[in-house]
Image 1 (tube, rainbow, N blue to C red):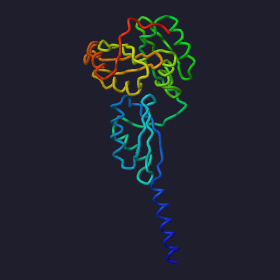
Image 2 (cartoon, rainbow, N blue to C red):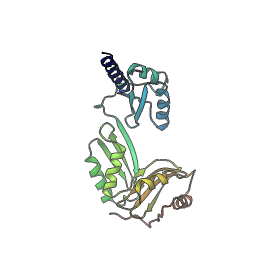
Image 3 (cartoon, rainbow, N blue to C red):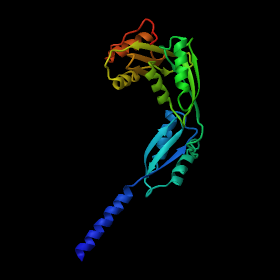
Image 4 (cartoon, one colour):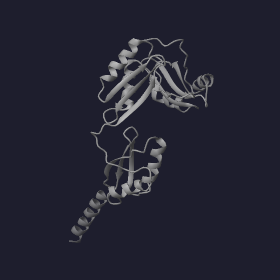
Length: 247
């Protein structure tokens, strides 16, 4: 009898431990969460709750998926933590809501009207893209889209697949763009991380099919000569093309 009682007690403890380790998730919209710094502040606020075990941010939708232990916290308590910040107040997330976003993409290899037309046709064919406005004079395209249907990463990948090399475009006097040829068979992920770590680099994209590297950089922190030198010092044997050609 004692043996049976011990086995039942052990089984109960196992089941209790398993239940205690289970987590639930909730998703909230935080309209004031507009940047990485905002996400960091939300992260700090929510991790004051010992029941919060994980956070997944989506800045385009301005949402956060919260993974939590229901034995230690609950959705109402989590919302209270956000309301206590005074700024990052939560609201309900609706997957059917139209969340308008826009972005500019510089493409030094968008060289002619045919390039612009192909880009427009491709992006207009994507679910969630509302408008496409190529500007050949400055070699950038502005795209408006529904962040509940698509995202920056998908749009950039579509352009990469077409043979273009998009990098973030800003209308600022302190922002410039650089374009290089890169060797074949480089580790794209590793090389991209190396470039992003350089002084003044805001964004960087490598197109492995075209063997090209496009960079957005801040002139207050670097310049064309220093940027090229830093890239080579990082181990990337890049070259400056005369003029990107259409492909």
